[in-house]
Length: 174
Length: 101
Image 1 (cartoon, rainbow over the protein chains, first blue to last red):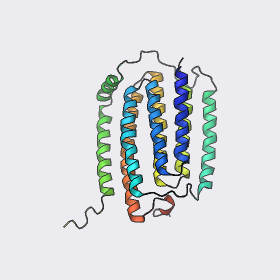
Image 2: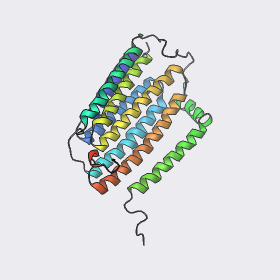
Image 3: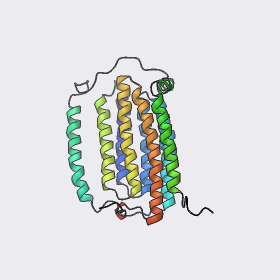
Image 4: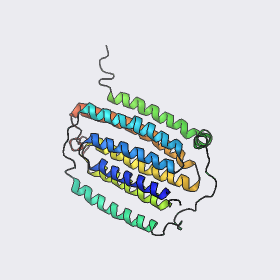
């Protein structure tokens, strides 16, 4: 049953992520990315990460993607040629990467559905029933300093975005 | 019946490679940023899968931080795109050769 859910979510994620790269119009690409975010959130629910599923929908689908769509509409992007003129060079870079990844994946997956030697054994502790509570306790005790640094990162990004996008900052403001 | 962890690794590998191919071959700079989002999501899937596998919440906390960095990256990246579009009136990456030697 869980394999069925995984198959559905994985298939939709792969299909929409290929569409994000392949579609010509950036608005359609962004909408495919929206569908992919929802399916990733569904995958998080099946992995007992309910809080992250909610955050994924709120932050990614609600904030980041709306920002993308705003910029696409703001810049009035016409449909233009899809790929680089340097796509042959990019292909030469991509094909060895693909082959390497396939070799790695087939080596990892060849050991069958049981836990092979390459992966650490599955822990047998119980899943915490209250996912949000557990994450909150972890975040505000063990990861308190990274949490504060993350707020600093957001502040820097906010100031940087305003400075970059404002028309004539520090110009003639008289 | 539980899903083996290698399936999640294969899924995130495929999504990450799709994003990387998108970064390398697209010429629209907004599509390039969307492909970067694909790569970030692939790593997030991996983190959450291993967090569930090992019963360790550290992976989920790390996804939280990756999400913060993704939001910051999008804000700064889109601001740069707007500034570039204002000065060059195009978003084709082949037109941007100011730093090319």
